[in-house]
Image (cartoon, rainbow, N blue to C red; front, side, top):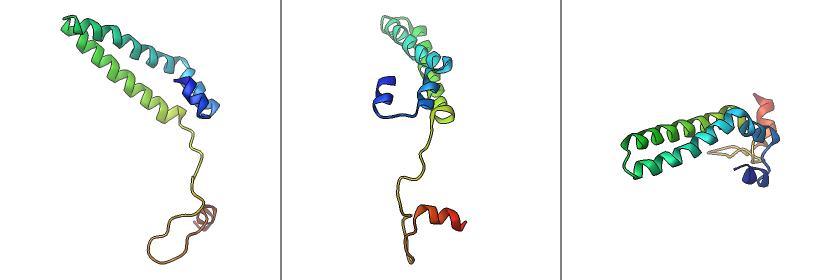
Length: 99
């Protein structure tokens, strides 16, 4: 995962958040669910339940980590605000100064 983030130019703080112990723990939990899925396919029904809970918990944890610690927005990606109805489009900076 880190390779694609680095290639796409993710901020260093985002990479650090995923490389922290909490981020690594969620990744390990996702990987730990794989052998449990295999055990469930072999006929152990409790392993399937544990694998599902582990996968869902790790997924939610990674999503929470992404939203709360690793998301660094870069601001508006358009230079002018869209216009609906009458009026003219203003640069984004002008909209912030007017408020």
